[in-house]
Image 1 (spheres, rainbow, N blue to C red):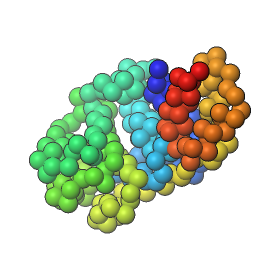
Image 2 (image 1 turned 135 degrees about the horizontal axis):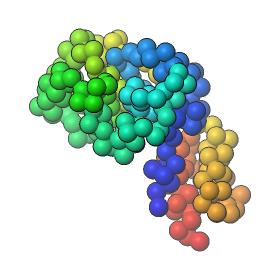
Image 3 (image 1 turned 30 degrees about the horizontal axis):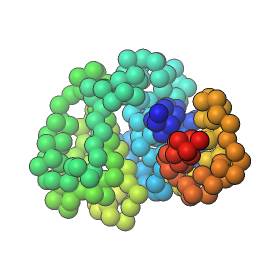
Length: 226
């Protein structure tokens, strides 16, 4: 049982509490006019990486039909959701800080996508990258190949070099409001056939402090105590 993975958003409309950022991204998806580099930054557990995956789906979905939402059912969407898409790479910055890793990534980015769409690189917790690694990626951000979309995600934007930030579209992600957290936990409980004590629900919401991932993990822990 993993509520965080099982109930992860797969459409822009399912991402909570990030209205303006999601509106702009959805509009880009409607028109197909995507930027080459994005920086999603802000509160932990607010939907940055989930939104990056949804954006990757929108970039490569073959049946968008101008809706602004990926279909979720084509081979490309399913591959991205399962982490098996040949042209979408998600990297944890904590394990990708060496300059050699950055150089290899920049080198592979030059090759055209295997599936005919676009390559999408998602660098999660990118503030963990070393200065040397950033230097190796700077050229990729300054002069990206036309088939590449780069999405950086971080909880610590102050640690991202200004030379990188200045070349990205910046999207702030805010802590979720208690009502949003409570609403989603209610949806999960309903789908799982769970009756939640209101006191337990309030405890989870307050303890999560706007972090949906923490709230979902706490819900699992509370259920294990029953």
